[in-house]
Structure formats: C-alpha cells, structure tokens
Amino acid sequence: MHKYILSGFNIYMKPQVRSTHPWFMHRLESLALATIVCFQLIFLFPLFFVSCKSSAKKITITDSSHLIIQLPANSQISEQEKKGLALACQQWFDTTLDKTGFNGAVLVAKGGNIVFEKYKGSGHVGRMDTINNLTSFHIASVSKTITAMAVLKLWQDGKLDINESFSKYFPTFDYPGITVRSLLNHRSGLPNYLYFMEDLGWNKKDYIKNQDVFDYLVNRKGELKNIGKPDSRFNYCNTNYALLALLIEKVSGQSYADYLQQQFFGPLNMKHSFVFKKEDSARVNPSYDWRGQMIPLNSLDLVYGDKNIYSTVEDLLTWDKALRSNMIFKPEVLQEAYTPYSNERAGIRNYGLGWRMNIYPDGKKMIYHNGWWHGYNAAFIRLIKEDATIIVLGNRYSRAIYKAKNLANIFGTQYQNAEDEESEATQANTNSSEKK
Image (cartoon, rainbow, N blue to C red):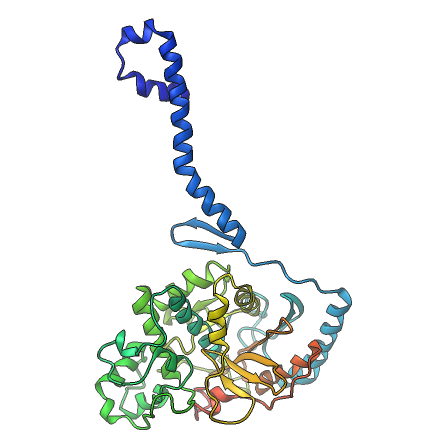
C-alpha cells in the first residue's frame, strides 16, 4: 500500500530528485504514512462512533435504509415457575379452547420467555397443511395497535403532530375539530365505512380502497348520517384507522406496507408479518365460520390500517418485546399510547391510542386488543406490570378466543374475569361475515 501511495506522490517529482535524495524519500514515506492515518481517522471515526453508539442500543445499520434491532435478553425465570405456568396454560387450553373446534395458535410468555406454545389444526380446514410457528394469521383489529404505533413513530420523529387537525395534512377534509389524536382514540365522531359505503351505493362487486373511503367522506358529506361531535364520546370506528393509514403514507412518502416493513417488521426480523394485498389471496390461509365453511373475500377486504395485517404468534411476541424495550419508542410516547382517553362512563374499560385497556380500582392495568374479521379471531394481551404476554390467533371462528384474558390470573396478580369481549363485532358489525 505504501508503494501505491508513494507512486501517487512521485508523479509530481522530477526523476533526478527521486534518484538523488534518499533522505527526501524517507521524509516522503513518512508523509505518506501520516496521510494514511489521517484518511483512516477522517473516514473511520464517524463509523466507529455510530458503531459504538449503536452497540449500546443494540441497533445495527446495515445500509442507509435497513436497521436491525437486537432486542434485550429475556428476563430470568426458574424452571419451576415455567412448568407451573405451562401446566396452567395447558389446563386452560384443554377446558376452554380445545373443545370448541379451535383452529389456530396460542403463545404465552413471561419476561419474553415462552412458557406455553400450542398449535392445532390446518391452514385449510380438512387439508394437511398443519398450522405451526410459521403460519401467519389475519390479526384483524389487532392491526390497529401497529397502525397507531406507526403514527406515534412519525410523531416521535417530528414528522407530524397528533394534536393537529387531520385537515392540516388533507386540506379537503372538511370536518372541523377532528384531530389525529381523536382518530387514534376513536373520538372523531365519524361514521363507519363498513356501513356508509354500501348505504351510499357502492357497488359491492368492487373492492373498496382507503382512498375511496376518504373520497366518500369528502365528496358526499351531506349524505352521511350519524356524524357526531368530535371528542364528545368514544365510538369504536374502523373509518378512523383507514384514514390514519393514508396519513402514514402521506407523511412518510411510502406505502403503508413499506413503512411498516422498513420501521418495524424488517428491523425486528418479523419475517412472517405483512400487509395483505389481493395478490396474496392464494398464499394466505382463508377463514372459516364455526361450522367449518370457508368465508370468501368481499368488497371490504382491501382496506388496511383498521385490519389486514397478517402475523404469527411468535412475531407478535417480538412486537411486544420491542414495545417493552424502549428501543423504538420513548417512554413518554408509550405513556401517551397507554393513557385512557374515554372517561365519561364509569367502569374498567377504556381506550388509549390504538390500545384497549382494563383499568382496575387497585391500579392494575391490562393493555390489549381483540380482533374479529370474517372467521379470523385474535387476542393480544399485555400485562405490563407482570411482564407477561398472551396471544391467541385463529382462522375458524371461535368466541372462546376472547376468554384468553382469563389467563392473566396465572401470573400471580388477580384480575377480574371479564366477560367475552367482542367489541370489534358488537359495536361495529351486524353481518357475521364482516366481523372485526
């Protein structure tokens, strides 16, 4: 290498100087070595600094657009505790799920350690494609938790303000008082697109897109019914999250699917999580009603943000661990997400920014979200204080999946046994083939 550097200098020297001044050549070689060191310091020091800083946070930059996040190690748990939890989970599975025709996956973890993992059935009922840890399920309204955190990531990065009016980002959206925050916590007062698109004459043979929902709200506002006053009450509404997906796209300059892949799924190695597109129809597992009859797609199946994320129980555990790690989100952002915003009614149930929660008189808090779409059911339960996670996914309709919250009591803290909660269905749907 030194010769190469010297030759670069030699082209500027006369031949007789090079041959008659060995002392000068010695000095020149010293200068060349100094040059090498300078180049190394100039170009390698910033990389070294980033590497050290990233190592501390366990974040590796592989190129300009791809991060790999190495999550912290799991907490320690004794074999005795693990066996006790596994036994309790197995008993719950045997008595609550197994006898109901359950077709899906269950995962329970403590401190990030999987204490119970169970798979039953096949992706296609009656076939041999056995469900396993690589089987992706439509997580229905659990998708809202990821949509909400994507919006909060953009807020954390200074790219939007959740307290601003939605119309700041979409000037033609003439609904005064509706903020990004009121979309996140279901206090916008907007009607549900699951109903008004059909009521206003949408051709059910055509797939609705997010932009269609927006256009109907803007261009046919005068024909809409049941528009409420913003921030006056909680009203669970899928329209809110269809609009938030459009906001993510506008602010990030990426598609909703690409943003989630770049910010969450890729860095966290959630290899089996993705946003559904029509071309995925042949590769995803269909859903079935409780009788085992396949439920076909309909005009509502391409709207995303409120639904349409597929994932596995292991990927969702990774997502849960990432949220606990504070490596993607600052604690104050998570605090905003887990704050109850609908307090006009007494009771333990409430809603944060993309998260349902049960808040108990003694201060305990259960952070969770359920999902129901066609024959897909999902329960994603996070016990922050106990550092425990309960995930149940299925593609054959089963109300028993929502009883997963009763597993919370196995972690040593007594939670009131909540009744079956199917709010995604009972508040937003009437047709059993269009549940969320």
